Image (cartoon, each protein chain N blue to C red):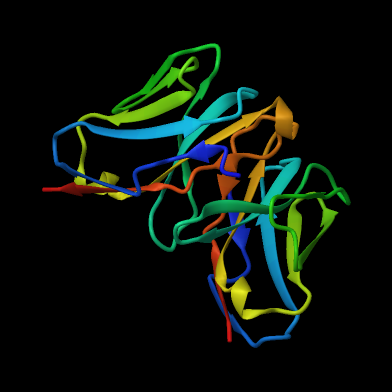
Length: 114
Length: 112
């Protein structure tokens, strides 16, 4: 049962524009959310996280928004650059899984075109 | 910088072989994890360990076992490799119960 869902397998955006990647979750016990970026043949790298006590967290060009009532989070990349082309995974953890393990979505492949 | 290393980037094995995948982290992290990544399925947790000699099953432990004899090293064992275990295997480590997980580069395993 997929508890973290990324419903868009792929997204294409022009360089300089905003990329918005979406993620939905079903488990109301999740209280910590992360985004990872993965290039082919490499391990995922941590990008940004947000705790459920916040609704926004910003780090440079990357901003994550959390809407707890809708069980939805999104990652905004502004402005998008060709080097941002990668697969982005949303992940969540919470008291229901003892907090150690992350539940990952299936990923969204972002392509930023020049 | 956290460094997580995996013993091989690419591995080819035959059906029925015993396979060892090794992972080492250099940041004294308590928690270590093994995932597999398959197209369209994302990352799925196989096993994790929150202390030396401790292990917990993840979502897909069948056909796998693990060993954690030292804090820095976490091994994934395929007792008898099968073709459906062809996948990208990713190791990760974290500090504390809610720490950010840091991943190794992955091992692309092909079972023929």
